[in-house]
Length: 155
Image 1 (spheres, one colour):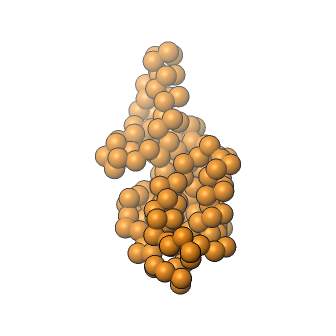
Image 2 (tube, helix red, strand yellow):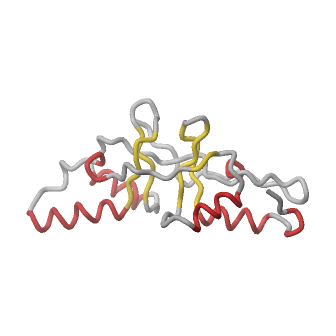
């Protein structure tokens, strides 16, 4: 399975009254994704190498089935020491979060800000017609807000 760049280039936002404020205009489009069959060691190496804290888990069709994060890896690290279990056979599927909060690509940055405010998550997978197309973070929403003039903010 090929891995896309998680920290891909973001779209250049427009300025002024015609500024687009959709999540799709500010999300990261090139993601590093993980297979449910990746080992946790492979996953941790990828996280460290790319300086990221997590990413989407997709099946062979590219459908979002979960998220894996550094926190999910901590559980396995703790168990491996306590139970003296080797880590090289543990797979993502066993430790990933399967309840995933997502956001639609057409949502506004204001809707995203509200969703972030009500949620413990710092990033959401972005879906378009049910398909994973990117990821938006709280940082992305702050950048979007800074790119807009206060008089052009509208819902």
